[in-house]
Length: 101
Image 1 (cartoon, rainbow, N blue to C red):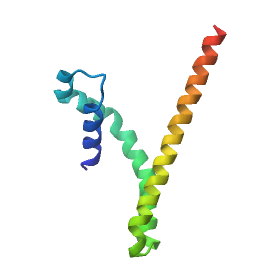
Image 2: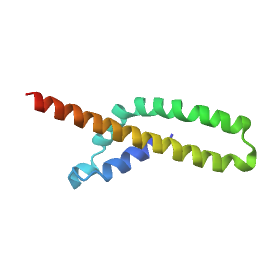
Image 3: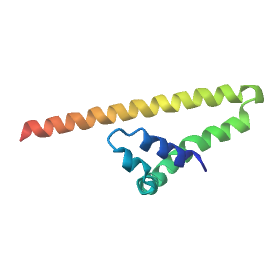
Image 4: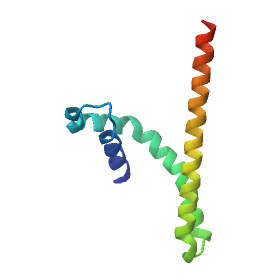
């Protein structure tokens, strides 16, 4: 319940392209929340529901915390590599398109 609003708040506060007066305005935060929440929540549920189901169904009690830590590390590594490859693909497509014109 609290994760996404806090995440969006800290992202906006750490955004250096926004002036200090705009950081105080809650309308920016609400707009970002309304835009990002449905996709982020869907991705979160697709990613973490199977992991949590497996964790509480099959992983022994003493191994649950390390399992979640390793799963989180793997998911973040995958997400970062996917974002980087997407950026490289977009940069390549933009470069190719600009070379054609």
